[in-house]
Every structure is written in C-alpha cells, then in structure tokens.
Image 1 (tube, rainbow, N blue to C red):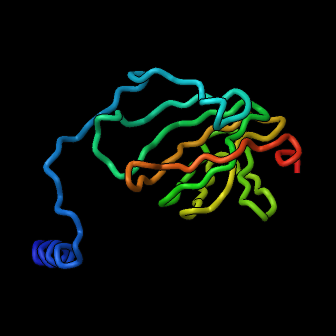
Image 2 (tube, rainbow, N blue to C red; image 1 turned 120 degrees about the vertical axis):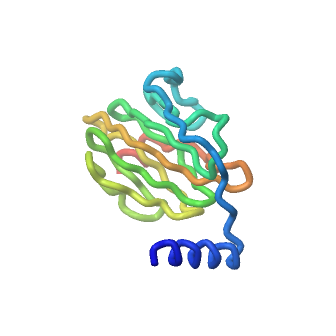
Length: 156
C-alpha cells in the first residue's frame, strides 16, 4: 500500500510538471568550514556577521545563512523574489514591513516574509539578535537591495 501511494504521488508530481528527483549524495557541511564574513555596508548598518550554511557549489533553489546582528545593526530595505523565512536563534530584534508597525522578534520564533514585500530586520537598539535566513532564489537572485534604513526609520 505504501509503495502504491509513493508511486501515485510521483506520477502526480510528474503530471504537474514537478522536477524529477536528482540522484545526489547527502552533504554534511562541517561547522566552521566556511569563513565568517562581515556583511556588506551597502546593504547593512552596524556590525553584522554572516555564516553561510551551504557551500555555493551545492545546487539548490534557496540560500541559507546564520546572520548575527550587534545591538542597533540591521539590514537595508529589501525584498525577496520568492520570499524568506527567518528563524530567530538568539536575542531580540525587529522586523519591519514598509507601511506597517515594526514587530519584535525573539529567540525561538519563526518569521515568514512573502515574495516582493519591502522590509528590513535586525537587532533592537539594546540587544544582539541572530537568525537563520532561508531565502528562496528566482533566476539566480535571492534579494533586491534598496536604500539603507535611516536612524529615524529604525527608531520608529
């Protein structure tokens, strides 16, 4: 019965145009095997460290990183062509959708940012914050970077 269900599911996926499963090996990325990088000041304000989770040679429709913000640090305004998921791993921060009130985010919370939504995220003024960012890729691009968040925008 189980095999029949799997076969039916695969058949349905094929009819729906789903990509065929690839034959790849499991990849384990050793902690610390990729160097931490300081985030680009064109796209971030303050001290932000990015640790990529998967090697760039891995073929995947998403990028993933652990992003650590010092107090007061944040992204620039930006959007994602297919959305982004944040999983807060430490501290306290903010996420802010353009035209809305900023929202506080804390360790253990998950944030979904829909495709095309202009937003920023980062630490609060008093607390550091880290999150895993899983960002979906379309046509080789995972983000559209815009202007830096001003101190006035950040404080409100």
